[in-house]
Length: 158
Image (cartoon, rainbow, N blue to C red; front, side, top):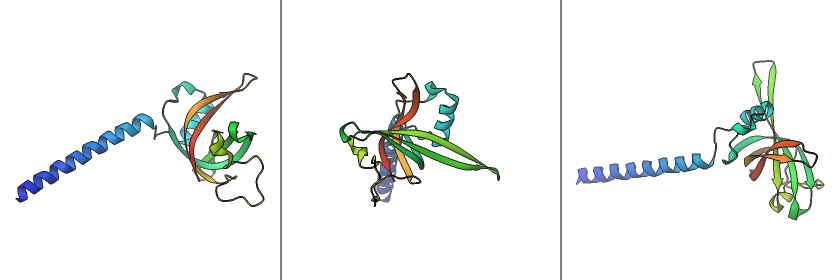
């Protein structure tokens, strides 16, 4: 009886581990978990944009340095959030890494209003807030021909 129970337990644990591996493979096919704000900043600054996989999502973390609302209309809402991460380099220097995050659509209009309310609630994104952003890399092209590398946000969490 014990050998049957042990065999069933071994079979069950092997099945769970196999399902877990398949889940990790599926996750890695959709999300580039190795991409960080620092690494993306380096690729953007040195301009090998073709090396950035725009078919996979990134999960980036950083502080809000600035917000710019370009179209406050909720139906066509369009804003940029400058996300910044930093680290000490030795004892005397700080490395600063910046990425522009593009917010489009009505779901973001309430998070970054064109005019800051007198008493903003906890949902309002403000300067120095820590954010976790899920997005994809893209190039924003302006009418004058200039380009801005951005991360198109799909989800944001404070």
